[in-house]
Length: 430
Image 1 (cartoon, rainbow, N blue to C red):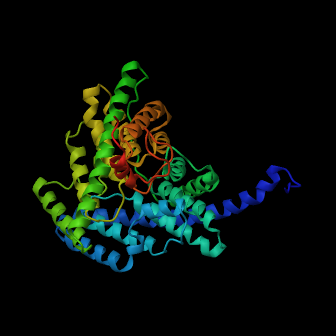
Image 2 (cartoon, rainbow, N blue to C red):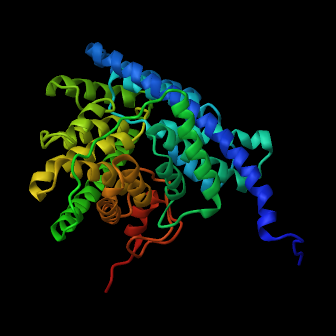
Image 3 (cartoon, helix red, strand yellow):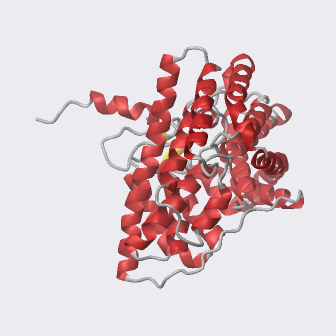
């Protein structure tokens, strides 16, 4: 057995220097890509809102994106799930074309009026760009996972302006109940630097004002607990419905480009039928409103239906911003029932529905503190943890593994996609 001549701290210096350099490179790539993406989203959103008739071309836009993915992107179609699979079981470097394909697909989705988000795009761009360094620095397969995790953290942090939450998201999203601390240095460095890179490019993030955070009381904690249960159930419903629609479309419609074409028809007709555009795109103005005054109680359901139809039929984008919308408007609707301030419950719903749907309670709690201030921390922690528990072993990322089950019996390292099959095979108790 060999022993080092130096102290552990001295031996650590080359390792730290190596990952500092790699993490900064990843951050510059991911932060710059996110900045370009956010600026593009701002432009296409403004154009769509000024030309509302463009929604009728959504079916053709969906068909075009589906056709491009069919011929150029079948090996990157899995998106975030591909990144998670490569971290758990490294096989081959993620094709660079994942970045431009998801970037273009998401911009087209927003331009023509699909209800999708932006996190998936930023995370996929960050992960794909980071993984290209594998060729440059001849990284071993097992070390690749740290690069991809750093790319995920950098993408998430730079697109939302939440560096600490982004870092924790990259560590937490891989497996339920388990985090990989070997990536803690590159993830934190990449997330913090990527956020700063975005700011240097002139990116401006939305500010949400929580006008009142009540003192901690027995009723305040009980109300937060009850709200957290509902947030988790809604997160579970969103994930299950999106996957169910996607599976149904794939079974019934073999030709992939026809799926978003049909989905585009449904969304466009639905927009015309309800007479409002508030449930398409990112929906940031409605989210801001949810912190200020009462909104229609059905807003969360409207956004959920439009987003499930868009993502389930194959439009590109992310799930997280729609989940923010769903959670904020649901919290707004629950506020008078639970005798809590509108802005407080909107803020809790904003992060807690995401926590339940993505199985990331720690990242969501830290995000609440970064976005709304430290005073909301205790309430956010309870809401996010309860939502995480009540969402069960489901989630928007089917490649997530079960690290430590929320409720036994679920074998460790099983994919979330396999959990329903496992439950069906469990023999009934006598």
